[in-house]
Length: 219
Image (cartoon, rainbow, N blue to C red; front, side, top):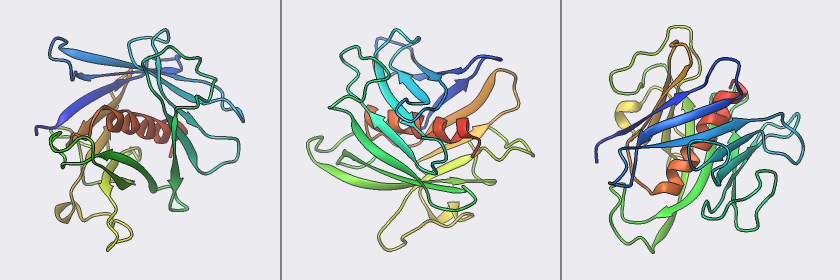
């Protein structure tokens, strides 16, 4: 499948993001995801993603980072009913975004995805567990973009295999890059997130939540 590119904007002096990109609905040219940053408290998410253009839309995912914590708790919820962002919904699926290196250059996470490969086909009822890692990168970029020379907030997403146990930076030619985020110095814009696979909308939401968690925390 062709890569999908999502632009991530953050207006100056506002604690919010907008994510815009191609829609899965053929009747809609583009979709918009709204994300709100809030003060990090013990039981309150510091990042809330809404499935739509503003905070009145249903909550799709949240990210918690308690004070002094190294690891994020990412909650992926059913966006069908409207919910209060502070609530930990009983039907939310929780995964840990784990800082796997003391410098913060690697963060691992996992989730269940539909089977049948990365093209969106196959048996959607069969699910498999994917173990993934965001790795800070200097060499892999979104198609057509160049990494700003002084920027450190650029990541590639790869899958951890049992044989490897970990991924190695600088081996993009030998590994499959599932997604990549490249930052920009453009005013009001954070960068672009390119997704090279299709594991469903839940996977996309986890990409948005984990990528913005890293970006917002300055890691």
